[in-house]
Length: 202
Image (cartoon, rainbow, N blue to C red; front, side, top):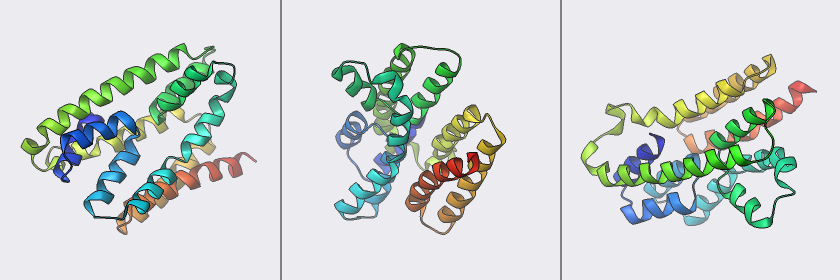
């Protein structure tokens, strides 16, 4: 659903299908891809687009650090594959599996690679149908990525401090988005949440 939403939004922002499909194949980072489309639509300079994507994806460093004990003994090729398909969704599912006693990365890789394939198929569908759907907000599909992240947060909550982190980060991001800075909101929320988590646990 989120992949199709991206395809629709990107198509309606003026990108060609080949550009949209190439972005999903090579970047594969939902929040960053939505931010890229918005910045391209606003004719932002390329350095701003690149810097924004890098900042948004900095959270992947934290996720990769968390998964390091499971991947550090793997061959280089498998480690690179695991890094490429790392997303918020696959990290959440892998963490859940490890908490239940899972060992190794078979579960993670199966889920992550499947998600990659489905994301790209959905992107193609959205890019092809994007011109015929009209305003995606009319159908509510623009809320799909928000709903996905809400689900991830709910699955990850284990302590009261986790609830505090989610509420504070959501409040700050929401306020920035309402002020007209959605890209800054994503970057700020992603940077503040880990800091709050570390502080609250100390």
